[in-house]
Image 1 (cartoon, rainbow, N blue to C red):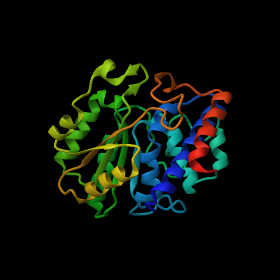
Image 2 (cartoon, rainbow, N blue to C red):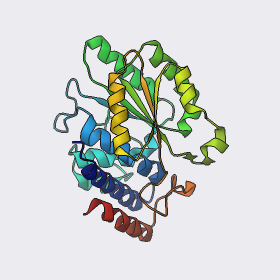
Image 3 (cartoon, one colour):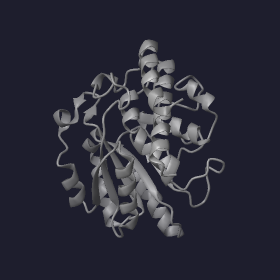
Image 4 (cartoon, rainbow, N blue to C red):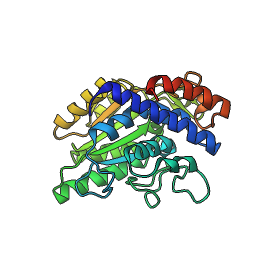
Length: 275
């Protein structure tokens, strides 16, 4: 499905799930979950070869949420896609719930790898891509990373490795919202010029608006055509996207909205999702 209108509506539903589940949990990371909703929607509702009824299907595409604190956006996508009952979203971060603060591959179907320690996701994805090559499977491996995550040294070791092994089935999205827990990324620890750095490490680099489905799909199509290089898609996004009072507000990196704020957010999102 590449019906942009329907995908935008689906992304709004995912954003609604995010604010509601984090509000109920009174804990979580709304800002970076909301900024990634359009990318996740494009992957899970159009791009990836997956089967919710057969989560371990041989040849399925893989997804790694390297910025594991954005687990709510992944949980919502999995539930909306049919991997588990949506009622489970209301148990986010509750004692005994499989929806932990960071994804746990042993607790929930559809989670390919447990993540949370920033900087490690790309290394794992390299292994997945290499495994596919060795086994002769043609699946693709997708990774979502944060721009603040680019401050981790392991990211660049993994970037060098992926280029060395010419992992052209590997595609990384960098959720570039320019905010991390301590403030603006460029003030905490500057990472620019990010595109030139990835290029210098041997990657095919594409820069897009991470909220524009046309640009997201054009980048994904280009990535599939590139041979001999992995692809890094630097997606310019807005932290808290879709909820006016959360947009570009660092304070909502890891703070749950109040019930009143959640009600206001849901009303805004329902105008898009037409629920």
